[in-house]
Length: 460
Image (cartoon, rainbow, N blue to C red):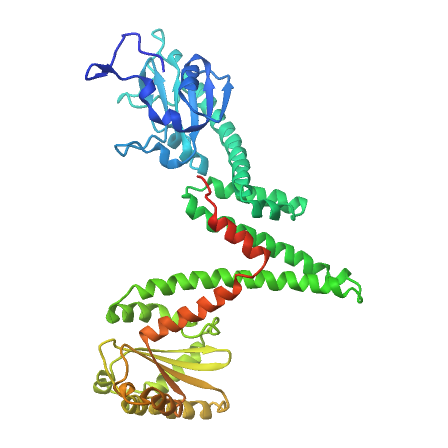
């Protein structure tokens, strides 16, 4: 930090540019200083903690609160520790040179001065291009060893400090603080470590909230597991002990499903933003068949039966009966087979622009029905249930007639089929998950903790 002996100065419009103009000094959270070269930085920084260290060099190394603080206004990345010799940069990319790629390294900035490297009585320590130091020189080796030792020390201290800060940040939420006291000693230590690691991640505060929430859920799951494992030691007449263990399990399960449901509702809302049916068709074509909960919340765990899928498609989509002209006529986009809870599902997606009517659609699904009946009979599985779901882009023509929708429903049911429009699908799914979320707001203490995290303002 010392000004070169030559008295070199930089001025802009007659105003000298000095080290005080380096704004990132104000963003340093933790600061390590060395010799006289570090004292000036102490006075310029707002560091929460300052550590004075002895080393064969002077200067400073700091860590900022957010990795983004090391990006200058003109887009330069200041994430580096520069080695200076007599006021000139002797080596850049020091962190990269030492292979420092841990999380902490993204937060490091510094400037080290080692004027003793430049000794007129000894060989030059700079490489030919003057941009780095000769690595096998004993003086350079000594400096590098000292710097690397300091970086490892800083990494350990920084990790500990950020872990503690992460715990404090989470405990600022009263509900989390109260929950923390319910953990056992070992779980409390592990929770502190987890919150600390979350705090170390290069994320915005809003992006950290879900991680804190999932951390709480993870430890609640551990508590439930411990509670259930203690059932063996509960006496047969300790009815309250059994109830407590199972109630904890039910509450956690309800909260986990609540979080899943809220995520699904966000997906549904994104679909609602697709006002053009042809765009919605393309999105649903890629998404629906792997996420059948859109059709029915109870279809949460659809399974694939590869051999059965081949048989169903061979039977239902036999090219001899369903030729190209027919497929064009019925406007089929895609058809898939899934199995849910023992029931076979054939789901067909129609083109958004195709407008059909119940009679035409019934003729089509009747062919599917006959093929499925034949297939299941041949496999000696005729008793197994199946359903055909047709998703259409627009209302069927006859739905506009008096009682048209109900009559259409009754006709399609004869072929074990039902019809929904894309928009009906989205609205139905939204209503189903909204009702669940509304009812689940009384999920208990876990809900209150997670909701409090959502409402909190976690700083970075």
